[in-house]
Image (cartoon, rainbow over all chains, first blue to last red; front, top):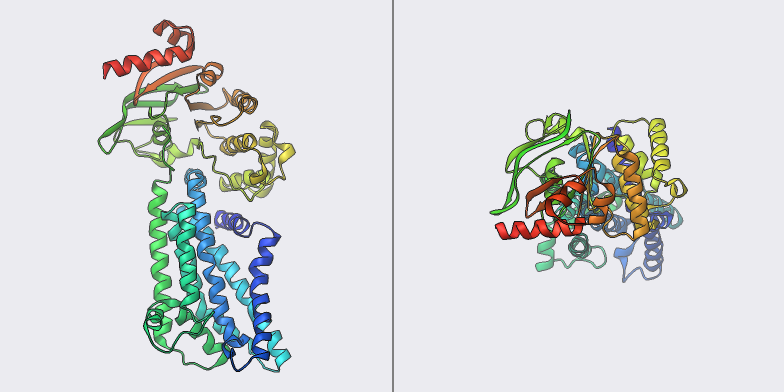
Amino acid sequence: MRRARLFYRRNVKEILKSSFGYTCFLGFPVAVLILFRFIAHYELHRVAWLHPAYFVPSLTLCMFAFMTPCMAYLVARDFSSAYLLRLSLSPLQKGEMLLGYTLPGFTIGILQFLVCALTLVVLGWIDGIVVSPLHLLQAMLVQTPALLFFIELGILIGCTKRESVALVISAFCLVFGFLLSDTWAPLPSSGNLTKWASHIPFYAAVRLGRHYTLHTSEVLMRDVWLTLGYALASLLCAAGTFCLKMTRPCPKSRS
Amino acid sequence: MEAIYITHLKKVYDKTVVINDLSLSIPQGELFVLLGGKNSGKSTLLKMLACLVPPTSGDAALMGYSITGDKSRAMKTLQYTPHEMGLSPELTTRENLELFASFYGLHKREAQERAGHIMGMCDLVDKEHTKVKDLPLGLQQRLSFAMAIVSHPAILLVDEFAHVLPHLAKREIWHMLMQVKRKITLVLATENTEEADILADRIGVLVNGRLCAVGTKDELLTKTGTHSLAQALAVLQKDEEAAV
């Protein structure tokens, strides 16, 4: 566990890079929330879906989705730079490496959620709306499988593609996450887009989160199983691919 | 005891023979240079010895441990320095070294001491708090080498170490290799005959996966009737191609 912890710390540094990175990861959702709160406050009839309590679950999902390109790039670069080749000769086990890659994404994602939740509490206090911390905690818990899905998807992409390709593929995933999660534009009540959205975990995770921040929608067990199922499947795929790749971690031979 | 003992090692990729029935022994403390042109099989041989690529047939023993039968013990005896360097760009020089030392079970204090010692040895003390991404290529190569010796391996396999560096930086790296010579068994794969000339105790010439000649520089020059290693390499490559 000590080695996994050390590798985890290294990966946090590699993802966040500098104090600017920390500011972006944690400051961006807060800035968006405050901005949208003002829009929602003054233009309530037209953009009610931007109200912070409604918007926090979808915003956090989008922030979680950023974990996919981050992890994909990190893992792909570690393979191509032969860092993982070095590690394969060290006593660090494959499981410890996988844990060391997964946990930084988790930590950053949970921190982002907490920052959003805190902002929501403050904005709710200004607007005279009481937001229960227990409900926020519940919202975080039901959205955690989606975070795991995004992290593992990133690891999976990073294992199979080089940095540039991995970034492009994960950027597509990010855009799909944005489009199909009812975040930046409300999903129509019917049609192909909604049909697609119902089969992937983004909208399901947002809906689950909203149940606890707003109590407006019902908890659909289908949403719970869908997010959990995707998370588990991505974990298994990423772990399997990573272990397989680590048996042959060499970049292409020069001679 | 021989540090490396290779017997009839062979590697075939998609019907292409990359390493062909190679046998070789390298005594402890020797700096052995594997000299060969592009696609001669140097990297593949090193990766097989590092247990990163399984051989098609044959075997090799590292400090007595077979790379096919006792892979985990064999892996513990060696370090491999890839030409891609394998560093963490966002970590400082010291952090990279301490992290790697910690992976080998050293506690924080011990890892700090080991990193300090290695940085002194590799002349990296001035740059201990500089992030790797801000280091020039020559210093990154030095750090890559330092990372390899931080775990005190018995055998160090070095793949195309200084091929992209300017001459001065190359000389500094060679000086570092000379420092650890005798303490560690070094196998250096290169196509640079000057490097082989300066560093090698013995040289093995690899052409199309076959070990054509093994010996000291003088032995190779006598055998080929040439006056320089570059000429000797050219003669051996020509002979091998004629035989094929």
